[in-house]
Length: 258
Length: 310
Image 1 (cartoon, rainbow over the protein chains, first blue to last red):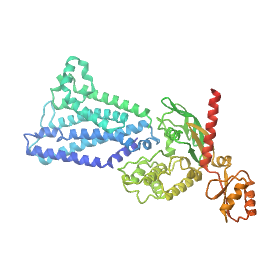
Image 2: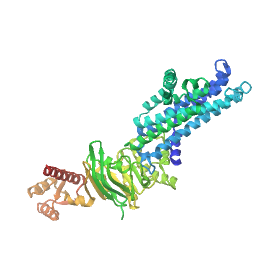
Image 3: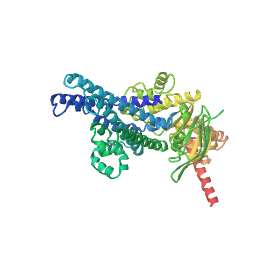
């Protein structure tokens, strides 16, 4: 299995887009750190640190694209056959792609957290104390980490859908579009979702609600009564939906002719 | 000797269309086997099914005694393949591709060996997006052979190769088969296949219509041709025509040998007719005409069987 994960990572590392997007992410973090330093009233340093200097949306968009292409490029370049007619089972091939993307997502979160800490140390040494309380018994730093963890989980909910669609359609455009729409959908339909949940309590268990997990942590006390959910329920809901979508994708991949 | 690949009663449908009908054959280790048939006969489907790319409805596929299915195919570690066209990642170099797919011990030695055997040194470190058709084809073949597998399945391997590269590939296939590697090669370049293959699988409309050796197929068609170089080709042709020998439409003087007596009779006739014979060559039957004849006979048989059934 690790040989396959290594091979998938090798392909990712050799793509120019990997390095361009990493540079872009670092550039955006540095830019927003400087903006927070110059215009602290508009870009509040504590909030900017919690949001990892605006890196999470970039990570989300890029990971949606990377997930779609890790499957669809094999069809586009005609390499899927070569990948499959080896001793490894289809299941192993797909799981290795999941693991490669998981490690890639993890790498981006670690990198953006590292850059955020570096920016804090360089630009806000005496102006921002990330260990000061930020409510709910958390410091700015621990809240930032908690939001990152929730964001990681809800991003993976989207990625599990992207994996499924890329498998079904062999087309990255369709998978990326649905992933990005899914990313915005939670914010767009929050009001409608709240109305539905107030009327029918069971409606809260839909996957779109689960994508609001990071928002719930970022705004303590605001989403909990509206969605009638606890943090642990959101966490569990995300894990269950990720497992369901990945399993459907696994089933489709095992059954298809290549 | 046990077979490296055994296919028994293999059936495959695409929806309502039955594309492989009770396909059965065995491949002997160390042999070069040609898989031939017209377009749409089921060659690529058969190859893809053997490689676990397609599900199948019934029958069995075994490689070195182990069953192959799309879900489980560990025995494919003994197989290298190139199907339809080489799959190439444009952002990787040829070397990266070989590194990616090389397996087991001595990977570096295997990579360097295959690069040198296929004469790929000049472009192997370049990104594949700039490769010509021939370079891509060579890389696809190198990927199939890089692990020096026991069984190699090649679909149209000569596509896009220049004469020099074709010869290099032919030499490589022969040398590897002498070391015990089995090759299953599908190609429409029948002249090339005739020079390579020892055994033949002829497939038509999803059925194996004949499994034979190249020698037996060519001999069974009885189409040996005698080619002559004479001092007066025009006169030679007239004499042969008058004596009712069967000649070919070739501009050279060619006589179709119906039995062992044809050659001395032809020589005698021409010498007596005052034509000097400069050279005589006996040509074997060719795969193209033999294959067409087998397909024709098989279709006639099938039609008769259908008519009888009605």
